[in-house]
Length: 469
Image 1 (cartoon, helix red, strand yellow):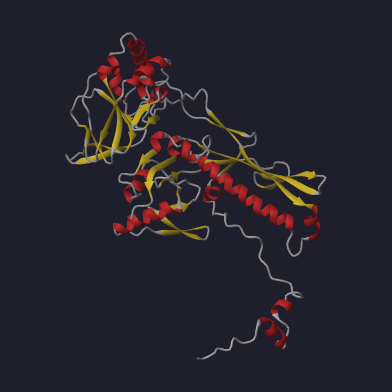
Image 2 (image 1 turned 90 degrees about the vertical axis):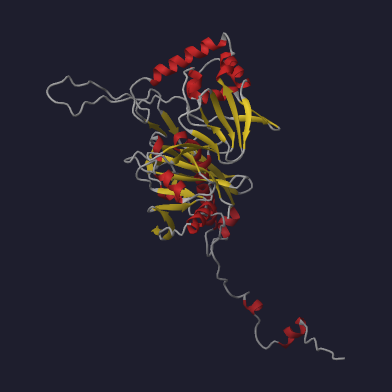
């Protein structure tokens, strides 16, 4: 049996050392150190690429031409187990019921919706059939399919959760479906037959009067964007009477007030006085606090329900992916809805999903240098990453596309510079005093907002699946 010599112990080795150990040497040496690092710092492309507008009064008013916009929004539902019902007040999102005042009638209408389910590939309605039902899509995706110029079938639109069609049925005018609606995924729809509307008896009179009033509003001259028309004569000869006109404005334009993100930074005076070499402790604390504030600022500018871009995109500018993952066709659809798109903004996982789709097709998107960083492009438009865009529990996200700047009627950031104790544009650091425990306090505040000047400046591709391989 062979016995292995274990060698000297650590204590014996220390006694045998013939020179100073590194541990001992460090007691007399100055350690080379980094500044404090922070993992939560992201590129914050939105803050970097948005043009910022000085908002001297703290409020920014977006004046627009008068728009005859009637309800074309999305409907919200409630569910009890497998039973799904529409919230009565949400029926005002239907074009014909916009601003209808009687909640009792809306409740009666909501109770008459029938729940139907469709499997992928099922025909919901067929072109040429009688249009006598209102459809609300509670869950799933439906393609509106029409006939192209050369007789082939083409997808006109994709409808998803909260979308609807057929609300013109409420006017009582007989017509046929001009398209075929086909389920792409399992679909749950709430359906209101015209005969159920007729069963409202006396309540139908108020409803009918309201719908007629809505029809008169829609009959006013307007352009394809719903704006009040400007009468212009062209191509005429001789001396005809020229039309007179004026440009009408919205009576109550939207105003954006600057939001604020704040925190109180506390530093003990002993730390601030004694431990400032080789780095100033207060400066490092402040630097990391400001980084966290700017991260929160970008998050709010994307997700806040009042000012966030995801919640302020016009409903006509929200589209759905055709099959789930973000394909080149989906991004083309997003691009086609606006001029001069400056950039896309997407979660890094959504960008990776788009890369997989292009690879499947044998396509290789280009790249461009943006502020020293190589980023993917599509049709020459940079796709900038942002981890502030949320990913749902179902593994879906969104991709934003935007035109920017006041000159192009785009998306702009709002801030106010020149505020007291300003440390960065729109951000100040104010000394709050020293308490009886010798702790110094600083109030750090960032003021900001974001405005969409016209609806087509911002578009969103929704329900983007990021986990399909």
